[in-house]
Length: 220
Image 1 (cartoon, helix red, strand yellow):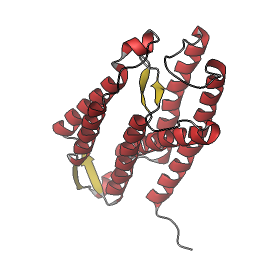
Image 2 (image 1 turned 90 degrees about the horizontal axis):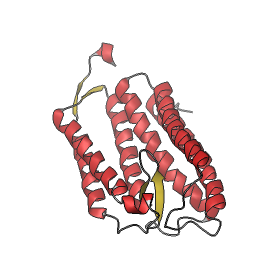
Image 3 (image 1 turned 45 degrees about the vertical axis):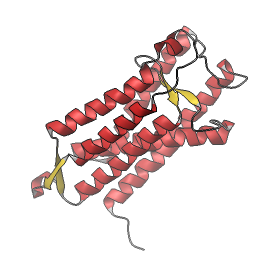
């Protein structure tokens, strides 16, 4: 039986971790919704108890640390670690919603609204938005791993950094701009899908503008 190439093994193990971790995260949300939304999750948002908010903030920070730690353990080169981080994050977020669908049949549609993150303010948006971001990150992560495996060294350009930051800013604004809904318990305004589209295009162009050169043997 032919052994799998090393990068495929890394991607597979990181994939399995992300899928399993997504179930753990989904299970926590199932319990929270049973506590705060026993009749079903709907907007406007309900205020969490102060001690629960503190635990949730710590849990979200821990989630990022765990995903980053797995990427660091799975690879040794900085760019490969970054690639595995965004790949793991993307797979984790996609399967988080798949597990919620399996566990409690939610979301009913991809345009159902959700609380996406809490730091520094609650992020809100339709489920399809984080899924598309996650899918983009996962694909870029895989492509970056494969580039590195071909012996190519990745170099940032000013343009790629600017595009990445702008894309991130636009997408975050689409999630964070409706403070009335998140802080005052009001119904959210219509989601700005055009901002999501602009942000994703900027991400893709940023990835395309990364400079890849043949790496010297000592840097591989």
